Image (cartoon, rainbow, N blue to C red; front, top):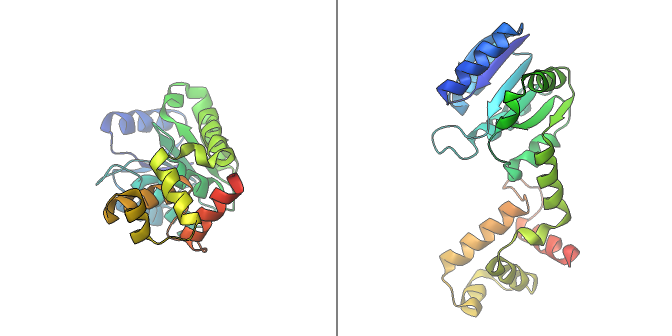
Length: 213
């Protein structure tokens, strides 16, 4: 079974390569960034991929965004995401994509070799593999959307719900326009409203606020 790995940590990528090779997998390529991962998928058409959430250059969410893009370019491509934390903004988008063959495990699970290999096999076969901690955090986000907001973000959202524009928000809260823009961006991220969202993000955020209340 051919595998492509996207992991910039040399110790971890080497360990994964040795583990998979000794377990009967063919590691076609190990890449260290999102661009290299997408190119490797094109070259090798792997049976399954392993992708770290954080990749160069910013080490934020390049990996998981590359995984989403790879599945867009190659529908049904099995992807198992590995991370030290839950990137909630893109995790939901990845896990809700059609075609199956997706998983999201925290890196601590790799040490449980049998469980890790079973999860990889399940994803390769078109199933899902979700870390219990990932499930718990995603469910908490969906059931309590307002609980993730700071006090200031709640104030901004409440004024947005009243129909005020950014300049009015800044005046009413005695903060700068840049601060308003930052708070609104945080609200969009916490409500998982990406730029590709088909609806108007400001309207969607207000609707989420009203439904939660």
